Structures are given as C-alpha cells and as structure tokens.
Image (tube, rainbow, N blue to C red; front, side, top):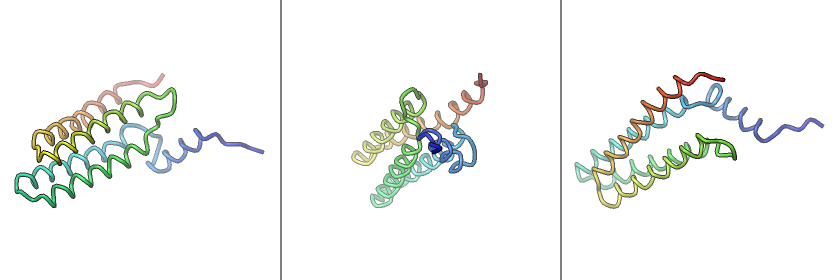
Length: 130
C-alpha cells in the first residue's frame, strides 16, 4: 500500500489553494486586507460609529484566524511560528483599539502590516535558493 505523508498532503493542499508553491507572496493580499479593515476601523472611530468599528475589527480578527490556519508551524519550521507570533501581537493591538477606541493602536496595526507587506517580501525576494 502506498502511504502519503501528512507533510506531502499539506504541501499539496497549500500549493493547490494558493496557485503554486507556498511562500510569502500569497500572504500579501491578506496583509493588505487587514490594513484595509484597520483603516476603516480608524475612520469609524473618528466618526464615532461604534458599530462600524466593531464590524471592521471583527473582520480583521476573522482574517487573522484564516491566515493563522494556513501557516506551517510544524517542528523545524521558522517562518510559520514567527508569523504566528506577529499575528498574536496584531490581535492584541486590535483588542486595544476596540476596547480603548485607540487610534494609536490602529496606527501601530497599520505600521506592522506595512512592514510585513513591504520589507518581508523584499527580503524573501533577495534570498536565493540553496
């Protein structure tokens, strides 16, 4: 009987789901979506629209759940656990923004995602495969 490893199944699943081999490039749209929700939450706070603020923060949190779920966090991996740590910090920042109506928290949220979008992609593209 031909057995397929769980790692092979996960790699095949990710490749099919994201139209190619897994990499940082397929996380970019998620990071941009998170920034969009953060900016809309900021506008909602500025306008005193608590319902819209809560909705945008809930959407951002749901997207973080999805993005966390596709990370490879198996033993021996480094990027998945690192991004999981970043996503956890982003969740706490969203919580602070929501509970304190904090524009500063949303600015921190946007700045962190801007870094991911710009600098991590640039760094990954400069690394040549062994």
